[in-house]
Image: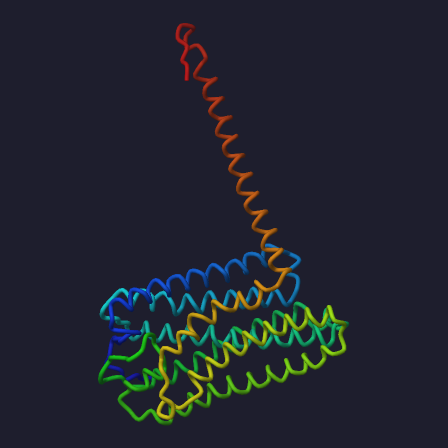
Length: 342
């Protein structure tokens, strides 16, 4: 594969050229990133430390989704946040390609995980008697493998085609992150065909999967009529959370990627929602509204605090014991004439 790129780095214009706006955005985005990582890792640790939750496919996929949100945010947000402190924001060509690969890799895997969660929800509500036999650990493992593989294939397709583009002209991008559409504007060749391919690829993933998810949730909601009021309320709450997350993610993806670059001039600041807010809202929407998860979070972290306090007390006791033994050794008579007191 031969790449004709002559540019070694790209320059971003960022969200704003106003230093005050950049400082405000730095603290806001930093807070959002910290809360995103903290919230998602809280869910991962809670589910992993709770055998009862980890044994359920639903919570297994929830923990996997939270882990992907952590990876996606860590691949995108730190560089963007740090750049807000600098007047000139640059990234190397290789760094740009690595970030693009990570963005689409984790985003593609997350789309497949959301589809798996929709299937899990469908089986749990529409076929409860066969749930344990259908959603076994072998199937869960296969779905996780499909998520990783699908994310990799989706990302590597974008990167391989991007490597074919020559970049020999201007290197300034009117954006706040490294987006493929922004890179197309800098390519020293006709990118019309490549742009159409990008739209076709995005449309295939976004529109088809989004439509399938909406249809599946529609079938689930229709089946709720046969349940009693308590089960209907619980199932509707779970499906409502799933639908909210699916709509937030796919609408942002469709608005961002499923349009030709020349046909739809959108404000690139809309991508803030896709890159920063969606990973933040996922744990809030999915799990913090779930009473079972909240109760387990309290129990797990209460147990961890008790364990830490207990270990601290044991260490203090061991140190006190060692100190007493040392004092007794020093207090012995040396040659029968000298007694050392500690």
